[in-house]
Image 1: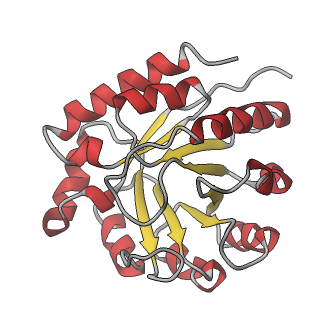
Image 2 (image 1 turned 45 degrees about the horizontal axis):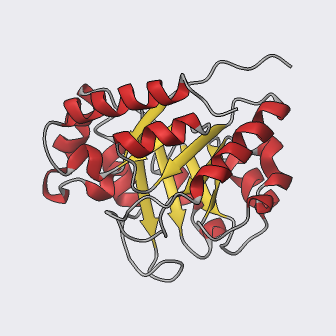
Length: 231
């Protein structure tokens, strides 16, 4: 089967932005070349932190038409898919470790008119996601333990990226392979070499310097990595 062309996309994570000037941060990142925005939703139960809700997603939607990637780090995603779809989420990403039947969650998200992804924690085996690959628009491989920004990249993610790349290529689907956690130019290049196509980047965009220049460096890194992919 011929290999499908791949989109390499950068999605700044708004958990790392200045909350007091979030709209301006979104606009600067969009002007600087962001392809999407990643919003971490945490309920204080599935992970030990609390973050964004539908109201904030709606506010961000009012500042950009770029896709909004909604990472649902919550125990009961089925109860909230509709609220985040209505707020303007483009892709709803649930965790395989959360409550609910993955097949039902995938169907619910598609029925709401959104794309859908499944996320795996670092300790979760790759095989947990394989039954659903033919129905997913995104697979999110966590390279940190979910809950807090600023953590270091865990290399255990790299073999999962490679397995994802091989499985999705066999299916011939344009499924995004997302990497989230500790993504900087060095780790982004390595992730791209192992097959990632969607790069969630937080501190490496917002923590210092110019967002546009930070995004330029990240894009150069992922393009280098994709050009020297592990086979």
